[in-house]
Image (cartoon, rainbow, N blue to C red; front, side, top):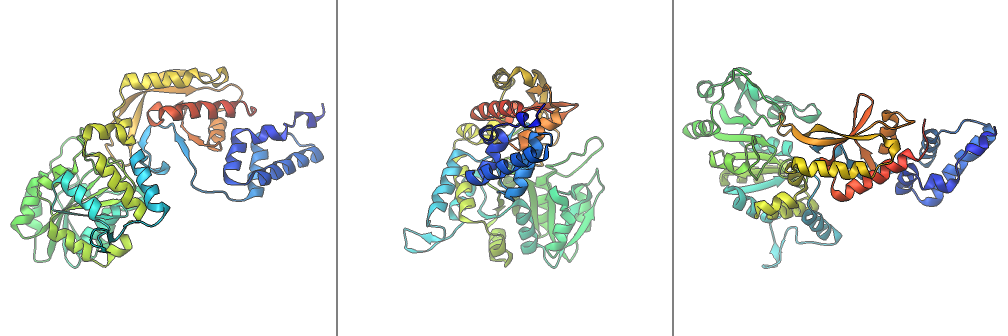
Length: 448
């Protein structure tokens, strides 16, 4: 048999998911030329045609495309750190576009015609929503902790429980952040049990801060003990010290099992730090809320200019915070909150919708499963869902997963014992349709 007869037409290659992926990154004439060169080489050399090898060769010839591409998240991990954590609400997207399209009143008071405060809008909303005296915004949660310690603990001691010396993503550890903030870490208690007396006994002439780190990405269970947050903040006040709580995930609505921003402020902490892109559901940002004197010390610190967020981040964060003025509406308007609130019936219906649109070659079946919150939030939470499990014909699940990651848009799912698992929790209704099209196209692009 003449191997050249097995070579696909160029238009078929351009219309495939892999072709669409290349076209998203490069001009059509360049993609067509690269694929045509690959086909010509196969005709001349007599090699066996494999779509993956042909597209890999074309991609190499075209060079590096955009590193940030749109992804359909079918993993069921709502705050997937590697996939950008919380998707933004439509109001936040519109606000970012409006601020970035041209000039904006970033640090200009239009009413007075004079220099303004870039944090004013977000700070006012955070005061309203949490009951704090003042607020500040930086570029991420770790930056908020670093700034808080640098402003309030530098040159002195920061006392923290051994059971709260966490490591966050990327290998960054609380002891290292404390050291970078110019403070000396004083560890008290044990991994599983720390009492208020342990903190009191460690207070000395050099103590500046009592630090509480909320265990948002882990849990210690069993024989445990810890003082209440309010008791720790009260001890700091008795000794004229600052109390700082790193809250981590930044929940503003009542999420079972997760300590909220308003609760931390009510307990009397001078500074509470949190992320804006976790359970808050906004852009990557770091929040500092608390007492006026503590916030002013952070605002005056030289690090503040290095850590300040840009206009698009502030616009998106302010728009997200405005949605929380109506908590019920926020649960539907903010994608992360909506995904977390989906019911079993919602997910079963979505899974059935997706499975019905897949070809028989996908080998799709529905089965019960679990979703994860992700993003270092609610580590023990397992959210019931309905999965669509694929056992494709003529191609391994691993090869199909690779092909889907190369599609446009890319699709990322879970691999489990030779099957590809799709969780509809993290797919919008429109994305369910896109996922079905991407999978159908990948299966139609040849098997191996």
